[in-house]
Length: 296
Image 1: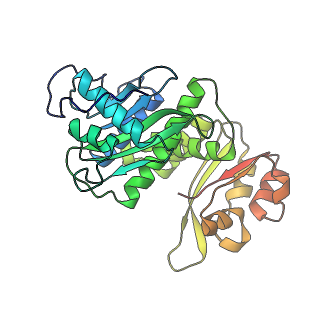
Image 2: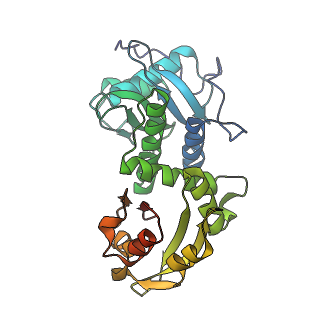
Image 3: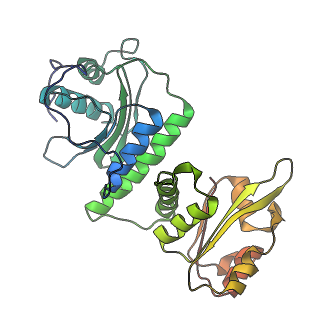
């Protein structure tokens, strides 16, 4: 990769604009939506970059990014690429107080003083894109912000892999798609005021599953309480009742309780190995074949 040098315009430049910003318009793509989540969630410029072998990095989609000249944008993208060349995310809180490497010099030249940049991977090592948020001022990145961008970058990598014909069907990818479906519900026209049942409807329809339920922990008790249930049109009422008849249950007695205690998702392509868990066994007896449970 060729270094574009450090002479460029800053964020204050009012020249050639970047590609159209993602603002949730009808028909926006998956990557546009993910950039919008980051840009609005952190109230900062956010963008996704595509990297094709033998070509320069290209701005794929952006939110809140001020107009940049072609040279300023090129310097910014190359600086971010240099920052993740070792495969790790680039986390910059203050370019002026950190060791002045080539990538930080490029960011400073583009008017950036703090940045988060996550590489999007195709097959465990090859980088096919970047997911970034930047700021003109120093910023101490909070753990929740790092967690948010980690999730969004993994979703963006999943979408980019799908676009280039490398889509996978691992349990973690399915977990990401489930979280993505919930994000879609939260950011729909109804917004966060939407009921839990509405979110479950979004989850079930987006993933084309048959049943979905939400459970919340009960304060000061080792129990989970039912918060909502959704069922597809062709699911008999007695099957729904068999799985969701009890409003609460002890965490040791169910697969959901295990997921809650361990804070790890469980993907079961077959329910038969989970016969020791009451709900999984009941679902298997009712004719359901697979299950996905994950903590939120």
